[in-house]
Image 1: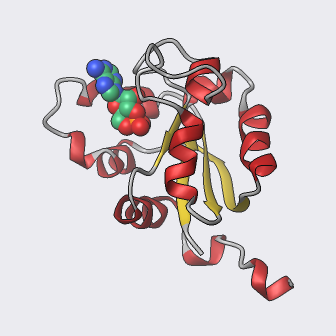
Image 2 (image 1 turned 60 degrees about the vertical axis):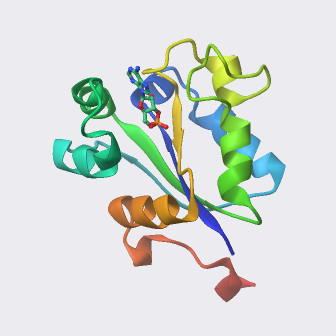
Image 3 (image 1 turned 45 degrees about the horizontal axis):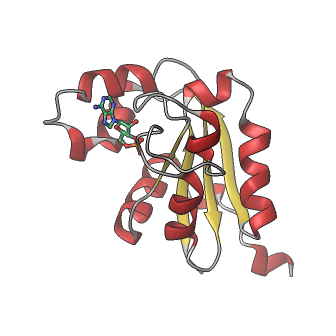
Length: 143
Ligand code: CMP
């Protein structure tokens, strides 16, 4: 079953949006298979955002994601990678449609509440950065 990595960023955690956001994915029918509230180290942030290393906002990105706790999650379900991206809305909240997470809760491209993997390759890479195999639940084992 397909898995994706989603992360509520420090702005979302600080604003008390963990419940609202996880509820959307649960109600949609996806299953939460791993989750933790954590402080991201600079090393982990630089690894996670490695593809943006040459961008002018890279320093800002790392500063922000390490500025407070994030809520790291792995979700599972059919087509969860693309569907979660749709539910999140455009990266720039100014372009995000109403009823999407960023459309409803964010106004700035930096502080845009949530991150989600954009492809199966990214999902695999990002899940491995934030979670150990034994931290993920296998629902099939419990029926
Ligand atoms: P995310 O999905 O976490 O992946 C990369 C992040 O870079 C993106 O969300 C945005 O929050 C951030 N980002 C993109 N463009 C800019 C920008 N111009 N200035 C600051 N941050 C940006």
